[in-house]
Length: 113
Image (cartoon, rainbow, N blue to C red):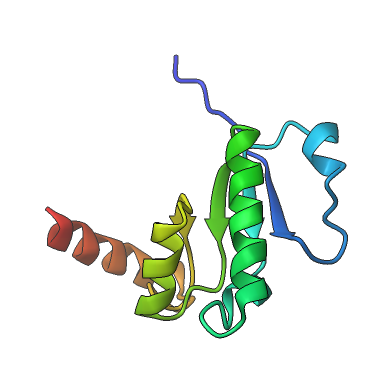
């Protein structure tokens, strides 16, 4: 019998209602860095510093770290260099209907093979 596993993420970490206290209160698996830190990551050293700190904190706690709002090749390079685990954003694809996503996924899987 196949057991499905539920994964819990803290979205928009570092802004709004996300709190360091949540890291202890909930059995989370992922931290998702808010896109506001990813934007201007090249021009604003404080954005890069906060991003690195979130990645380090997440990894120290055994969590996967996801960067939201990745839009440029340079974002990808910087985030890979600082050890971010996953990237998401318009750099990879825009939102699309489920039917279109199935075709997009098949095409990208074929290109990766």
